[in-house]
Image (cartoon, rainbow, N blue to C red):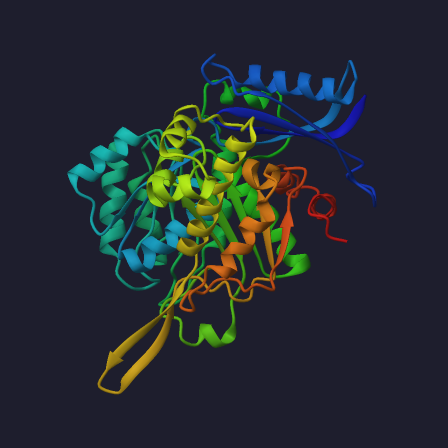
Length: 455
């Protein structure tokens, strides 16, 4: 059997492959899916990739599977590890962080102001895949970004460095990194002037650098022998798919509940009314990562947040039975009780993650009386809430969980309203379609709408 494109999603624990055919026709097709354990521990992720392809062949009931192109997403071995260094946290640091998260990065360290010796030590310990330096609006403060760049250059790390700060520093930055191992990329300022975020150029370069320096897991440097097209960080691919769909159907929110984290992606400009009272700017496309809200690896964090008594009451079991459930917790539930337990965890992860992602109204009191302002991301114009990831594509009561987002609003949060339409990525292929969209956007959009059952 021969198909057009195979997309590999190389995760920390599982490698999934999705097959797509007739991508240049008016009716592109999703062919099927295969999976296998990711083989990081064996020293070569290609073993897991080949295992996933074998599983796909078994599912398709074919002995041979050929493909014109193999493309990939990866979050193996921590995915895209980055450190971010800016001037003022609420301005350039936040802008740089938004760019990095939107590109699919796993941010390991953030600093504001001038770097200290302890910061430099931390950067070396993390050994990031990319270092992002920002600081100063264009034609504003110059010294901090220059100082930080010179210190990072002196580390002489074999790590790509992206500079996205004050435009006046370009020549000095080039000189600082001229004779170092670091490959330097200079892009437009992420915060060119007050209240102006410009994160898309940096986001794009981060993904390009990731693809060029794909060495995040044992064997990943050899993945190029098999991969013929683009490689993206998996969360960046989900964001790419969300942005593609936004262009077609409008404002949306994508939820990806996983075993270790819950990612929230929003693509919306928000309402004009709230924009007028917004304290500081927010990007149209925003991603947040909640590292304490996973339903497997970080399951005990959620148990502590909800409380054992409340969980036991919701599940109609004793505290002793709950403890047994916690100790025997599996990545994929097998019994009704295990499934109900994961649904309780997922419900809390969904509502908590969206509340952290969303902005709020605040009342300020001054000489002129009470003034209401808005702070953070405005989700009030979101028309669609999408569920992807293992939990929200497989659990029976996923729709009821997503409904609770709007119902949980006490009136001060900038959350979607109850009229937002709920959609599920039934084929669990959103990340694959995000990377497919780099070369075949129309095919990716068509297949994604099929998976979401959008007519």
